[in-house]
Image (cartoon, rainbow over all chains, first blue to last red; front, side):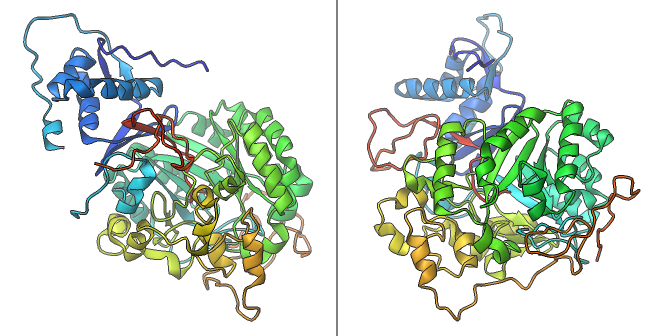
Length: 114
Length: 403
Length: 40
């Protein structure tokens, strides 16, 4: 099936897609794409925090780090992000040039409150 | 608000008994007024109710839906486009982050409106049609209704509208036309949606005559498995999953859990097929508005708790069909913790036969049906048909009784 | 922690949990917006 979705590369810069509405729920969130009409259910608050924070970090891995996701869980999170990329819930953004400077966005606080 | 432990993870449906902060989508009937008098109308529509929500009250509902971040709302009726403020409310919803899909018989979708819709994001259109030919359709929806619907489809196609749908209620009379429906929608570039007939509203009067036979249900199921890609069903045939392989969808009743109905006077029901006081959760005009009803009504709390399947839990297919449709059981006088009247294993037929012959199935006193025949009256019940409104009639509301 | 692993995949198949799957539970479940009964 032809799709404009890009295969998920965690070393690239991502963000929640602009046509997407994300509604927090007690169990995580519901995400609806107004363009392709797909609806996804995010099953954990930390995952929701990661999705919301993607735009603030140079790549997905940095986002996982900033949100305090344990490395042992990274494969599961990357699989989830790949699913979201496939359904176009997240999209690539113009890559940010690499920099050694500390980013303005600090640790992801939503994960702490999850 | 509550400290009840929710399961972490699991399937979405496992979360339903703990409630969602907002419906995933909901149906909003804007008016009981309608230019048609379809024999099976689930909302017994025809005449406007004088207590209808005002424009300001409707805007307040939209404001609430925006606050609750409802993704989109299915607007219907009656015929929603006969409300003078319909187009204003459409714009208002879209302008307040609430997507709209509206269901219509097409009466107002002239070329100009079609062009307007084609240029509007976040709005979907669904045209109702119950026959792939005028002969089959008009018996149920009235003389001229097929022409009205197809004219609307032409206008939408010509205007470059994307993703518009044709919604068909499957009946004994059209169940053999599924391929023809697909061909029809392909011709207009529309998407086909088929849904289940329930014995709701006026549907109760014609259900015995119109609901598909067991054989037709089996054929429908096979057809969906073979051709269902790209055909929407609104998960309304989940009771057919007991034939074997489950159909796509959540495969359970969404009433009060993921969906609900707001009716033209602001009453909130568990489901558009359950317009009856037993399924009335509250009113948007009450203190706390729609949000309070959705989150705190007793009825919805009840529906969100685990349901007893009763005798059905003994059946090996229970996991697939979950006992079927609550509204179908209720309006045929069957117990809710028993089989669906159209149970594909045959338990429904047995249950119907075992009903107390003297008991009358529940019926809502709410009936907004036209009290006189309208132009283009359906002929299924043998009533004489008045000629349909002529194309050259100035008012597209010819034959429409208001109040 | 849930004591029975649910057989979930990223695209929801609504078949009941009759059998256990080897794959780990996914954090995302895709649901059809059209696939919920109670809307007409």
